[in-house]
Image 1 (cartoon, rainbow, N blue to C red):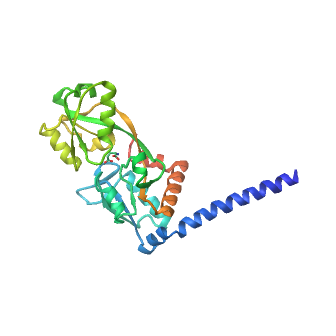
Image 2: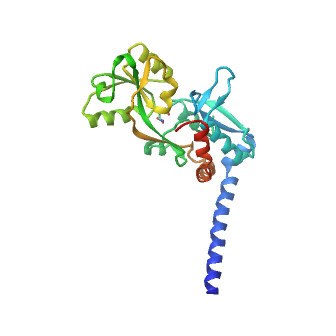
Image 3: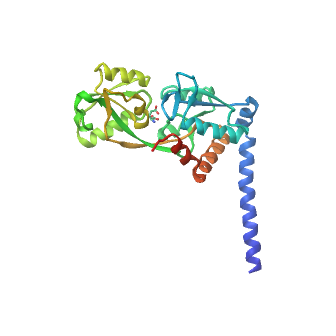
Length: 263
Ligand code: GLU
């Protein structure tokens, strides 16, 4: 019995040493040292997705669920949640900004995909959304089926086109796509009739809903959002993932979801 305790005790000690040294390695890694020297964590966030990352035109302040996550990571690495420098990104710019080192992290409704994992480190998911469809009320479109033969506006470099195409194939309908660099451009195309539908994650569509439009009940292709960092910055990826998982298990992520009324 005594031997057993000794054995168990030494296993626990070994496990904590290994865990401790992992953290030590991560916080001593060159990428983390560079952020500490810089003094701020540079984070790419959306500025046009209300409740996730949104710049209030009245105050010019960027706020939202993903900004709160950025602050929590800054707190973890730099000891202060105010030590962040937020930069506006969209679906097209967020990858290149990571590639050229202008931002340390992207926390911007960035769906984790196998393809993207080849280029970036992603944390475990912190939120799951679904792809949705925004149409003109006057068009009397009730679901994706009614979009047979119609044009759908999607964002360049987003997951939306593939998601809608897969769903259209399941239904046996034919749809065409027009792709745009930004969401306001897709909304303008919808308003002027150049496209019949604007498709992207439902949370993003919410920001473009107005009196003349409606979001259809269809939701497909679950979108798991992760925090992305540059490949090679592995100490950073490790600390980010630890922070996300701690926030999930402590209930902090759920608190933020409630705070921003996301569900
Ligand atoms: N979440 C989707 C993606 O990562 C939609 C585009 C976006 O996030 O802007 O492709």
